[in-house]
Length: 66
Image (cartoon, rainbow, N blue to C red):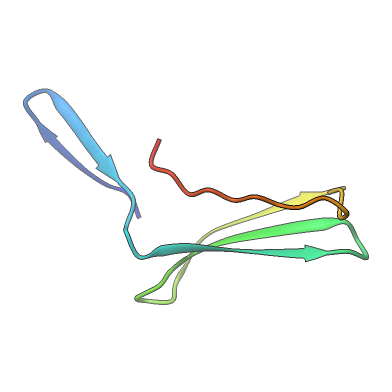
């Protein structure tokens, strides 16, 4: 979960450093599933599904705080 701090009129917000992403590609249904997981607790933080994905192209993932 994002954590935020307020100080000197600036809000600092960052993601937990233990978060990692897993992507699963279903070639039959052309569906991409993306999961964000907390590596310490094992809890699922976020899941996303995309339909009609081109399965013959590589998939790049970046997790960023911005």
